[in-house]
Amino acid sequence: MSQPAKSARVPRGATVESGGAPGPKAAKEPRETGAGSAGARRAAAQRLTMRRKLATAAMELFATKGYEATTVDEIAATAGVARRTFFRHFRSKEEAIFPDHDDTLVRASGVLDAAPPHENPLDTVCRGIKEVMRMYAASPAVSVERYRLTREVPALREREIASVARYERLFTRYLLGHFDEAAHHAGDDDPLLAEVAASAVVTAHNHVLRRWLRGGAQGDLEAQLDHAFAIVRETFGTGIGAGRADREEAPAASARAQGEVLVTVARTDAPLDEVMRAIEKALKKA
Image (tube, rainbow, N blue to C red):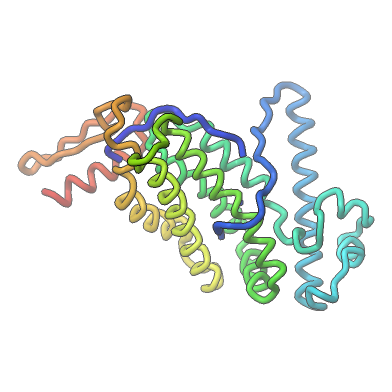
């Protein structure tokens, strides 16, 4: 990217679609030390394990009995737990097949929070949404079956849209957080570009993920996603915040060809992908 970004002011606010009802705000993961840290991690792991167990039971029943004919009591019984245990983890049966979105939203938010000050915010968002990709790639067979179910059952599709829309809101707010509030006035295109760029990242992710799922989860998903993100960066990356007077003038990395030699200049803390893009761009011009 040609413009390094200043540190973010991230408001708190999960394939990813626009629209849907607002979801719960993502909370920062607490900083834990000592015995409390181990206890909290165990509790979080146990919670996620139970959510996944209930989700597996729900998907099995939806596939065999059908969505409409399946009850919460049957899901709980199949998972070997009481009805009240189900409702401690999910509000409805359609919510049960998305057990990982809340935790993934927290991880994506953590990527944004920990972004280095010099990193272009669009690069940060691309890294953040990879947490969603990793969630699907961690269980390919489950993800393919879930994709099939959401295509066949409108209620599940609506729940998916409502759940994953939280990611787009998170990324849009992050990008908007890099612009001064006073800059939101007529004639300033930065806020518009922030929203369009966030939507472009989300759309690229959706397109690649859906194609991967339709193909039976075959192929290198991350490599396909990186290719799609490169197109987004080329289209929007140099525009976000370009011309802001308070940004550093020098990019994190640059490269130029001098005869048969390629000269690359980069800060020691420059992201490797930004260095590689600078080299690739210089080689194309050589």
